[in-house]
Amino acid sequence: MNVRSVVMAIALSIVASGVAWSADKANEQAEVRKAADSALAALYKAQPSARKAVESAAGYAAFSNFGMKILVAGGGSGKGVAVNNKTKAMTYMKMAEVQAGLGFGAKKFQLVFVFETEKALNDFVNSGWEFGGQATAAAKMADKGAALQGAVSMSPGVWLYQVTDKGLAVELTAKGTKYYKDADLN
Image (cartoon, rainbow, N blue to C red; front, top):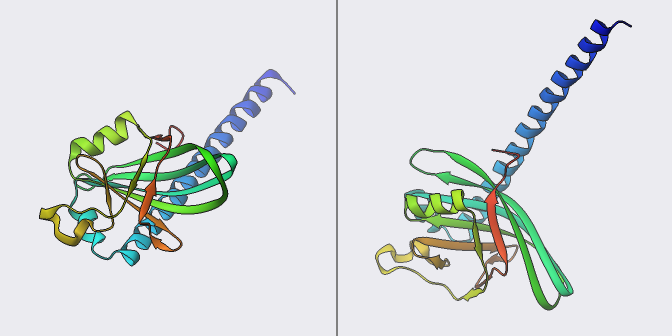
């Protein structure tokens, strides 16, 4: 085998791996979009008025997450998309969570953030987001009526719905949670 044949073989393998990576990326993006659509469907089933809140907002982010806690340590991870309702721009995101405290169990849950302003959406997408603590009970804004019933205000202009297999969660917990762009999928 001459040098030219070796170079051609290497070039073909690089191109083939790039095509495979591109197909894998497209498949993973499709899976994340499917999970986000599932989160929205679960929310709309549990809280039909949420559809209006999501559709009339500047944007939203929908995540499918899995968390586990064993004795004193726990964590979780998830993927989702943030969508600008005006431009239809979609940003793939990741979520990582760490928590401490006594407990045992695992749960799958879905989160839908509703951003009232484009600034709130852009801050979430471009700066990432970290928070800790816990919020309880349902909250709603007076001028939004029942549209945000079942959501918890996370910060000015940002509302969060959490859906579990039992429906809309009454208590939302987010301890040591970070949201950030997925560098591999964007």
